[in-house]
Amino acid sequence: MIPNEDVFDRHSATYEKHLNSILTVSGKTNDFFADEKIEQLLRICKAIQLDPKNSSLIDIGCGNGEVTRRVEPLFSKVTGTDLSGTSLEKAQKNCARSHFIHSKENKSIPVSDQSFDVALAFCVLHHIQPQSRNFFMKDIYRLLKPHGILLIYEHNPFNPLTQYIVSRCEFDKDAVLLRRSACENLVESNSFQIVESKFTLILPFKNKKLRHMEHKFLGQLPLGAQYFVAARK
View 1 (tube, rainbow, N blue to C red):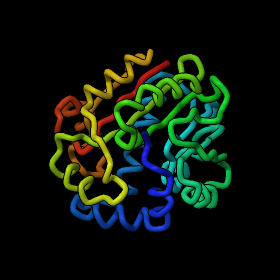
View 2: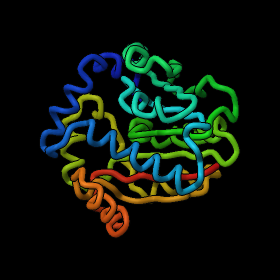
View 3: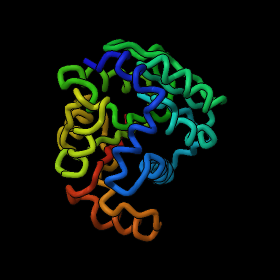
């Protein structure tokens, strides 16, 4: 089960303000964390020789479009989907070139099979109850083209700062955090092949050299605020 769309509708107008107020303890804003995700996405695309300019992308659980507006100029076709109609209205105003779809709880996303080259699920799985996660993954597998890429970002439940932030977040009250190993098992059990899986945001700095060092040397240490799992269909 995914939390009722009313929860996200209620918080749509104050989402960024509320999130940034909680993130002050980390010394960063939501923009920093969103930019880091895009950086990893583009690096993975380059590694697997996928050209964003000739690729379609779906941002699942797009909310107000914070990530969508960042990928909009990078990919040839961008679609966002979310439970919250109120959030989608705001996303559409921020992302004029993107297409948005109102999804429903525990229902397949209303798009055709094999429609996208890339699917993003950034901090979505912890909102889905464990018994419903296989259905969610199967639907993503369905909508991806052959050899399409899935990039998942999730909170690291071993990180004390992450636990604190989640506990203070109004729209994370029903969240069920999952370990990286559980996320990997979920991905592989639904026919995906893992391309890369690492902890990230261990060093909360924008410096590219430090970010590169973290990715290269520290990614397997369960210290980061979040982790990502990249997988191919």
